[in-house]
Length: 323
Ligand code: NAD
Ligand code: UDP
Image (cartoon, rainbow, N blue to C red; front, side, top):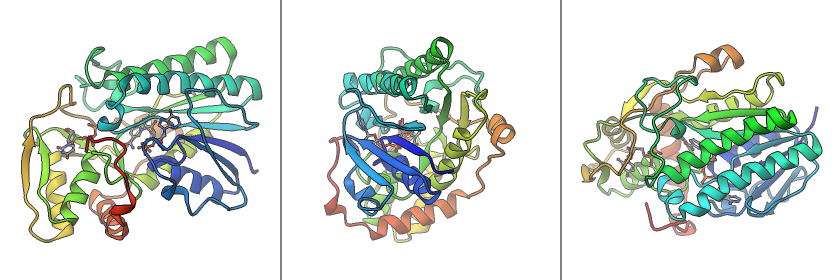
């Protein structure tokens, strides 16, 4: 049955793919975004279609819509973006989530919160299961994001306990694919942009820190499946690809696929509090939603690189100087 769905942060990288998929399934979609870290370019093909509306609005201010489901994705996600105005990042996580929950309380909607693997901080348990409480610095440069997202999880569960709101908390691990902002400073977008331009790929630290990378289509599948679970299931639930790579291995993959003679070099020391390892335990996702990524990093990078080759970089403005 067709639903009325609000996607905050719907013009962003993940949000634009999610809006597309929800529309393809026959839903009515409201995309709310202040376009801080995205551009209308991501949703230009959806604007004007029958079941899609774009609302330019900031989630730190309240909003009201008659909807059945809310996906709360609004928040800068790249370190250079969320550290640009850390106080605003914290407000976006906390006030944005509260406004979604307040709306859900009024209209009886279900809320899915885009949480993050960052809530595990620099983890001392590896891979990270949902039962791990994390190792997070409360006062460092990443804290505005990590602690903002942790507080958002807390508010979700307080609204469940206090007001019986139907909630789903999803901890998303590093995801990549077409429509990543070319100037977001994240490792996949930086390496691809650099390799395609024949520039040197910039490794921070010794490149031995690890991440696991999930292709966007598979992640979006997971989000929709979590939203569809029975009301009793609240999460938190990890979604991410459990195959782990070092950042140096990622750089080597990108150079191999792009071809040419791009060099890889250590450009600067590891940023403060940069997690040394990160990999999801997805046992719960397999059990609850029958979900596990199948796309190899090589295939996902090929698709992402193909998209980066098609875009005109002059159409993109850097949201912050940090990339
Ligand atoms: P993104 O920056 O592309 O998308 C975020 C969107 O939110 C952007 O369109 C931005 O303009 C919008 N936004 C930011 N602040 C806002 C505000 N105050 N009001 C309204 N809109 C606002 O990033 P993304 O990678 O698509 O991330 C989407 C969500 O998923 C974020 O909440 C992020 O924390 C979470 N997440 C993403 C990843 C990942 O690897 N991509 C990993 C973990 C969690
Ligand atoms: N990184 C890097 N070169 C870059 C951008 C990032 O070596 O040009 C490193 C970064 O220090 C981190 C990893 O790649 O160790 C992943 O960074 P990203 O910002 O993509 O995500 P996050 O740190 O939030 O997982």
